Figure (spheres, rainbow, N blue to C red):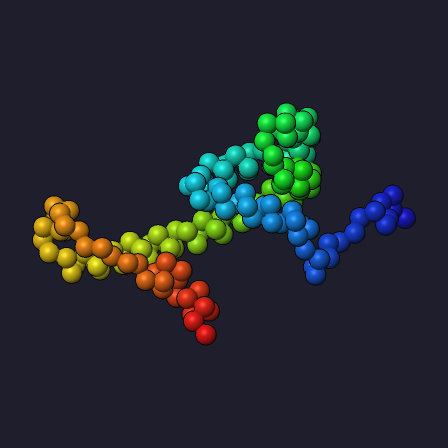
Amino acid sequence: MSLWRGHVEPPEPERPALPEEEAAVIEKVANQVVKRGMTVPAIIFFESVKPMNFIGSQAMVFFEPIVQGLFDFKDYTTFRQALEKRTTLEILIQRIEALDAIQVAREKRIKAFFKEEKKKWKWYQRYLGLFLPKTKIPDEVLNGPEESSKKAP
């Protein structure tokens, strides 16, 4: 007989790790981190504070009256509740890494597009940067071939 019988349950594979509203807040945080180019510092920070995520969530409870008094954050409480779970920071880190991989692939496609486009420019445009032509980046380059094919039909 075990002391923990009935208390330890295996995770259910069909059940999501986070509720929908918490997953949406995690997605917003990950998008802002990648958009601002803070992927590496954010991952280092989150990895270093992973053992103390519950303490961080309780610090958010302490500062909530001050923060809510100065700013009107709708997702503050949801993010705090999400941080109380051990798995949330790992999910956030994985989401940041996935979004950063998409961003890096997009930047590589844009760089390759401009490299090919510059071959068509005249010498004074390439080397001196004078009278640069207006270049529109195609949707295949911006969104990737897999995403642009989804939107086409």
